[in-house]
Amino acid sequence: MSRARTLRIDRIACTGQGLCAELLPELIDLDEWGYPVLKDRTVPDRLRAHARRAVAACPVLALHTDDDRT
Amino acid sequence: MTSSAAARFAPHPLAPGPGDPAARLLAGWYATGRPATLADHLRHYGPPPLASATGGRTPLPLAEAMTAAGLTGRGGAGFPTARKLGAVAARRGRCVVVVNAMESEPASRKDQFLIAVAPHLVLDGAVLAAMAVGADTVHVCLPRDRAAQYRRLSTAVDERRRARLDQVRLRLHALPHSYVSSESTSLVRWLNGGPARPQGGPPRTHERGVGRRPTLVHNAETLAHLALIARYGPAWYRQVGTPDEPGTLLVTVSGAVRAPAVLEVALGTPLATVLDRAGGATQPLRAVLLGGFAGTWLPAEQLRTPLTRHDLAPLGAAPGAGVLVALPEASCGLTETARVLTYLAAHSARQCGPCRLGLPAVAEDFTALAAGRADADLLSRLRRRVGLLPDRGACRHPDGAARLAASALHAFADDVDHHLTHGACPAAHRPPRLPVPPATAPETWR
Image 1 (cartoon, rainbow over the protein chains, first blue to last red):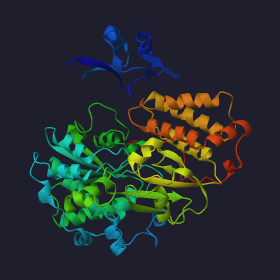
Image 2: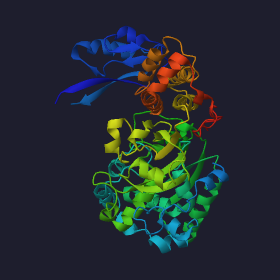
Image 3: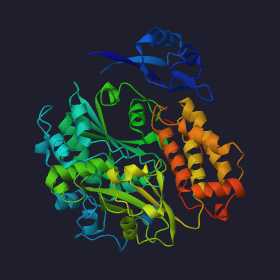
Image 4: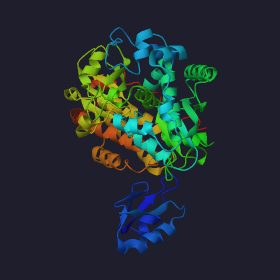
């Protein structure tokens, strides 16, 4: 059984700082107000380190990765 | 709702009599024509079959009955009732049951009507569900601005207490009333001492809800159906409706019909037949709004569609909260939609960026379009913004608003062209047809 990592944004906590899109542009865009738009929830293996960094950088701890059993 | 509005929705001579096979939740009401006391209720339906629901945490015969019956939630999402029961019962620790009677949908009166005429059916269902999942408390959540409804239910609870009918505690709560306060996580958050705003997740309510206990939240109508299925069995329930979507549902019909009413109709009934049951259209129709303010506009050509999730899905629609509003030919669907979107924007919980900022922007664009003040980029900007609403909030409020906006652009495509090129149509200046409350933000969340 492999485990896929998926991104999750706590929409109530998010204040639209935009760091996540800067650190993980492959998966995250910003809307016109600076709030993240997930292009793809699933984190490919090659982006795991980037995703981890983006999660750690969010100043309001609104970005998470979840383990999804597949 | 005011008492005059209650009177407006009272059944009328065209409502089905006791012989109507679709009359179930409302059968007692049709039989007597007065709100059911506990004595009326027991005379008509017999005592609640508590024995089948009890047995601690393991057996769940009630959930099995709901699976066999194919009952789905009547709050709008249409989730299978048995799966919710099972998910809560599977958790460790004492559970809690919450009755969602908030009915924040402004075009809906079904829960209010049901609680007015058959409060004991709803309470029976809540108690049966509580026994089945091993809950000791049932919280009934009502909107604060409906004092009469609170009194009515309070009387019903007292009647049951005096008769020593229930083995669980029934508690009534009056919550602040706004569009998003009826979301299940809003109720849980309020019951836990917080604001009546959506919580988002995880954990989900069935994992950790009221008092951190596993919590089952059901719409009032769902529980009333449950109470009848527990008595009469799944086969009885399946006697009406379609094989995939059995049973009946309550539909609030309003707009350009002769006799606006809350009707109980079998699933699979064509929309046109539902309108006929409400006395028929008073004038040629342009479209109907189906599901509620978070619902879908359907052009009049599609009125032959049966009222089931399966038949409506290809049209991007769903029964939703059981709302059907008839919009006459001589009205402007864009103006009506703009008013609804402005209301929905004002009723955002203002917690999530996409809803707090995106929804007012969509409402503003739509208002400009309806008023014939569109700039050259408006339509592409509006479509982009509508596309950015779904799936980006802690609840489904922005998704519902986006569905309404997108369906309006689709159903009233000719009007969109006209408004873009020639300005507002003459009908845009007519008095509004939809019952949209003032677009003011809720005063309090607590």
